[in-house]
Image (cartoon, rainbow, N blue to C red; front, side, top):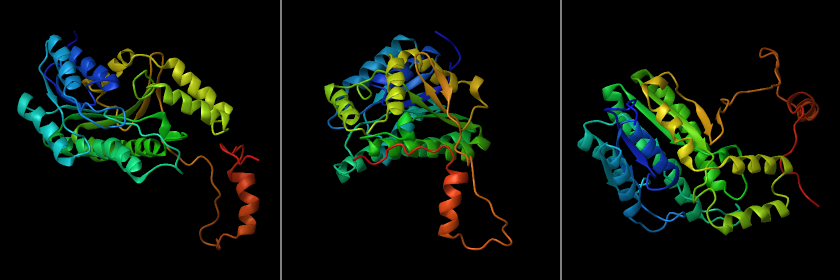
Length: 315
């Protein structure tokens, strides 16, 4: 047991299983009290079960901290408010928020239903915003807080998960924005992309079968496949890197704000912030309307230097 988070109080969503459970326990190991939030649904978000949240809460209590379960749905604005209120009512205040809850409904975009899109965005992106919105009210008043959001390397591009990729990309942008809005109040907001063996990342045979089909169809390039193999190789139980999340929640990380990390058993890395890496520039005072003729010449020669189409058409 450590003491770095002694006296701090946390809300962790998706804490009944996988990454969320590991994060809740890592916070508890450092002395934090925890509201263990988990609807207890299946990987696609259907159903409900109180036992995952109950189990993690009991594990936290065995570590010597206070812990209470919450069974609400993060996609509900009012349920998210109640999760934050439960932390304040139970422990006196909220110091730490870890948004881990998520679901998967994979489908190629031309087969994806509106409900499959809406539900994944509702849980991942709206759910993260819901919790952040309510937590920021209290954190702004107390001028202290640590918000840690869960994104995915899928936000940089993936196949068969446009809903998931879009949601995780939104979480990155949300993290950047909250960091800038809340930093002045002593509140930090960071995100991490986990590489872990969980029911979402490994799941059943259908996920492996789907990956194989994409490889055979040429939807995944050799370079992308190599990166995915590296990710799968590094995938391990999330307990290996959960201490990194506890570190981000501690006072030692007070000046770390607006960062996006990758975390695995063997790697802690940081993503670069989006920036313009190359541009065409003309004199503002004399520049005329861009012509297609000059764009056809300049874009390949000066802007898209060394560019390779990640998914060229196939015969």
